[in-house]
Image 1 (cartoon, rainbow, N blue to C red):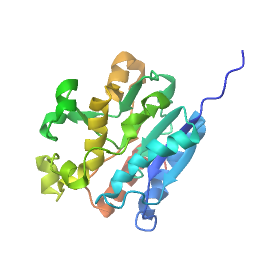
Image 2: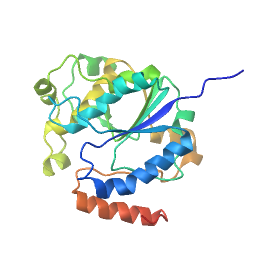
Image 3: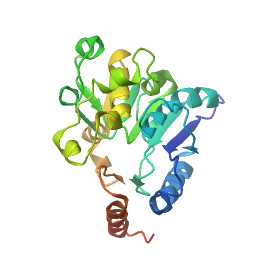
Length: 234
């Protein structure tokens, strides 16, 4: 029987292309190659739709509306400064459609003030939002806040020691808070990439690279070193 082709989009966020050119010259070719490998479209979120929020990273929440307008089956978000190895797997072929995925997660209790959604959920999931996947069944992971004002949300966020050392203020972690809260609020099933590797040990490998709270110049040096280690010449 004929089946409809699965519609996938890989999203990234870049509202200052000139400022991040050194980085995206390294990451975009790999992201586009990954899209070709898994049969996905590539979409750069380049305009701000939520200017009332201090952090541009809140714009990741645009995926909520974009994905529905595009009628996507799968939505993959990757930060523009993340390197994707050519061997990277199409995780949508392994992830149940009723489950969202992050590369990893933190213990929510050290980062967020709990409300009734975190308390009721009880899984203590602290989102790491530089790489995540949600199907159309779980699109609420990307949903913008509709019950908290910006300052109210910021007051629930507590950067960890290393982030404070690097000058992180609560508002800079808003998308991690929003995704964590949405997972709890909507009771979304959750997996990490490490969970997948545990289930299928043959998946073990270095598939991506990402660091944060690092100056651009230092990050570019480390990115080039990583690419050289992968046998890729930028």
